[in-house]
Structures are given as C-alpha cells and as structure tokens.
Image (cartoon, rainbow, N blue to C red; front, side, top):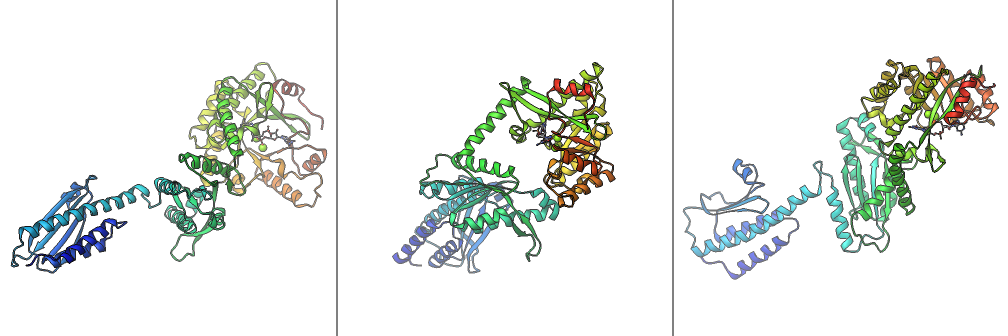
Length: 560
Ligand code: C2E
Ligand code: MG
Ligand code: MG
C-alpha cells in the first residue's frame, strides 16, 4: 500500500485540531476520524474502551465503543493504553486482517503517534466532562453550589453581574407537601419547581440547590415578573399528564446587584440573600423580601441581642412578671401567667423585642427553662411562707417540641423545688405542620400524665385549627385578644358570633377558657353573656413585678 497523501494527512490534522477544540468532547467527530484513518491505512477495525479506574478495567466495567468495523479484523496491529492523571483508563485498539499486506514500520509509527495525540486530547475532554458532571451537580442531578459559583465567577470576570438579581429561596411547608403527595412524588415536585425556575431564567442566570428545599441563583431582571410569580406560588405537576398538581411557594430573599458591581468574594452576595431570606421566612405574608442596607443594621442588632442574651442569662438580668388570672363571677385571683422582662440598665425591655430573635435558634429554650426555674423558686417561697399558692403558667416555645425528653426535663426542674405538679401549667402555641402536631400531642399527654396542666396559647391568631383543640387533651384554651369582639362591634356581628361559638365549643369538650387582653367593662359584659369565667387582661392588672404581685395574692380578690 502507498504512503498517505499530503491532502489526507492535512485532513487528519485539521480534524485533530477540531476535536481538541470540541467543548464538550464530540463522539461523532471522534468516530469519523477513526473511520477515516481506518480507510486510508487499510485497517479492519477500531475499538476504544473507557474505564473510570484501573480496577474497573480489570472487572471490565466501562464503556466500549466500536468506532469502525468491516468484519474482517482478526489481528491486533496497535494497542495503546493510557492512564490519565485522574486514573481513568482509555484503550484504543486498531485491527488488520491477517491476510492483508503487512504494514510498514513507518505506517505503524505514524498511526501510533496520531492515535496517542488523539487519545491524549480525548482523555482530557472526557475528564473535563466527567468533572463537570460530578463537580457541578449533586447526586439528584441538581446544579450545586459550585455551579452557582462558576456562573458568578465568569459573569464577574466579564463585568456582567451588575443589574442582575441574586436569590435564596426556602420552600414553604415542603414537609407538608411531602406528606400530602408522598416522598417520591415530593421529589418530583421539587425537581419540577427547580425546572420551572430554570426555564424562567432562560439561560441568562443560574439556579442551584443548596440542599433539602433550599435553592440559590441569579437571574436577569428582564424575567423578574415570571420569577416572582414562581416564588409567590404556582401549581407544580407531579404526574406525566400534569393533572395532579400541588401548590408550591417559597420564602425568597433577593439582592439586586448594583451597577457597577465587582464581587470580591461569594460572601458579597451570599450574606445578603441569606439575610433577606431569613427575614422572608419569618414574616407570614408575602414571601419575597428584597435586601436593603437597613437589614445590615437589623442583623447587627440581632447578633448583639444573641450575644448579650448569654451574658444576661448568667447575670440573671431576666425577671418574671406575673399577670393575674381572675374569676369574673366572684373576683377571685385563681392563677397567673409568668411573662419575661429583660432588665437592662434599669430599663425594662418587653419580650416582643427579644423573644423572636431568641426563637431563631434554641436560645429561647434556655430562657423558658430559666423562667420555669424562677417560677418554681417563687412558688416554693410562697408555700414556705404559708401563702396560698396559685397555679402559674409558663410559656414554652414550640422550639422545645423536638426534644423527646422535654417532659422529663420539665419534671426535673419542678421536683427540684418540690413544687406540687398541679401548680404548674405549660402554655404552648398552635403549630401548622403535622410533624409538629404529633410532637405536640406527645408532649401534652406526657405532661398530663404527670399532673401538669397544659394550655394552648393565642387561640385565634393565625391558623386556629379545630383539630388542635379537639384531638389534643388540653386543660385550658387561651383565647387571644384578637378574637374578643371590640366595643364597637354589634351583638349580631360576625366577630360576636364567632367568639360565642368558639367559647361554647371549648366548654362542650370540657376545656377551661381564659380570655386574654380584656381591657374594658363592655368586653366584660360580652364575656359574662357568653359564660366566660376567667380573664387575664389590663382590665384587672398588667403583668406585675414579683413584690407587687404578692400583694395581689395576699388580697385574694378583685372587685367585679
Ligand atoms: P402571650 O403568652 O400571649 O402573653 C400575653 C401577652 O398579652 C402579654 O404580652 C401580656 O402583657 C399581653 N396582655 C395581657 N393583657 C392585655 C391587655 O389587656 N391588653 C393588651 N394590649 N395586652 C395584654 P407580653 O408580656 O408583652 O408578652 C408577649 C409574648 O411574648 C407572650 O404572649 C409570649 O408569647 C411571649 N413571651 C413572654 N414571656 C415569655 C417566655 O418566658 N417564654 C416564651 N417562650 N415566650 C414568652
Ligand atoms: Mg402565653
Ligand atoms: Mg397569649
């Protein structure tokens, strides 16, 4: 056979150059090249094998491609095996027919050289592709943080980030979605929601999963309307026909990157979208919060409160205030609620300015136990002093519910002060998810078995569910002031009717009702008309410091 022509050699070179520029590796172009080489050099077969590791090569678990085959290849002419730096193995084998004329040494050398060059490039291309697959997506096929980082790195280098928007989202109640549609379908919902965002971003940004139901990304603001629609809540299908759908929405923190914008580190973007995202998660209404610079101050304040809290707890800066509960038929003081006050530099800080912050982590649990401990000390003191002890309710955040030993921990404190269990009542608030619902039931039952009273707090705020009061054996229903009719409401107004029904339902199922936030004589009239007996409100007293409250215990009754 004659030597190959210049033209053919040039054609190979051209292809070689093209293959090495393929991004990613193009198999068809590779097959074309091997086929042409086989034709020109009169070869019978070309086979390429790819193995991720030498071990897999031994086991024969890899990909084997027959690039060309005229059916007559019965003798190996050249076999080249290369191992890349990542330990991936590529083997290329060229076959001839033994009956054909033997190849010259020159030809074999040409083939050998050409094949090695090609394989070197192919190995690199494949490696890059594999690295992309493993490095930029998680096991479920979602883009991961590195995909997000790569996008912003490139956009930043090209000065393209300014004006775009970055986001962090956390899906609302995804645990409930999982329970409603099942875990497998839940996975499909999650993937479809992600795809919807990806479509809306239209290749001009990125979306990546941080884990669970949390995602981050960047989008071009041209598509903001559609993105907002998705975050606010859209039906997501989880069957192939799109008939079964579930509504998914998210708490979104958005940061609009200023123009010009030069990123120094991922923190320049991450800190802001996380900050806004955290705020979005806490507010009940719209789930979308756009970052602004005042948030930084709020976060600094938040960090300061969290730091001061630890010191405050050690220094006993928290005081128990007691708000009396009064039987409105005879005016007898029948109990009190313990409410926390932070005394800092002689100033009294109300709970609403620090409790929501403490609830962001488990600090609140330390505070609740601190309160319980102090209440037990006071009860013990009253008993020791021969005062008539009364039942005191202590607020316990729902953050405690995950603690499977919560009841034991509570008993431990009460028993330490030898306080009879019936003097303690634990107030818990409603929950919205089923997971917490079962925890709530477990805790309430556990406390009741120990003779400790339980109250559902703030009934009427948020998602009041009848399930909650019917299925959990509470002793007390604390009706929030928000459903106590205001003075101006007529007696046949909806608020009056609703209030009357709630009270009669509670009485029917054997719950005691405590009405909170009663301020006026007119409200008292309404309560009396609806057979409400126990009131906690400014009408009788505000939450009082210990010494002042003790005067009320000693006085025993109020004028009614
Ligand atoms: P809460 O448990 O529902 O407590 C009742 C709140 O209503 C108290 O607010 C009380 O001062 C207020 N209140 C009572 N009567 C009236 C009234 O007639 N009019 C008005 N406008 N308000 C009235 P406070 O003490 O500011 O506490 C607010 C919330 O902070 C509490 O609501 C409770 O959820 C939480 N909290 C207070 N102390 C603790 C604690 O030690 N642990 C936990 N986890 N939460 C606490
Ligand atoms: Mg309460
Ligand atoms: Mg309440």
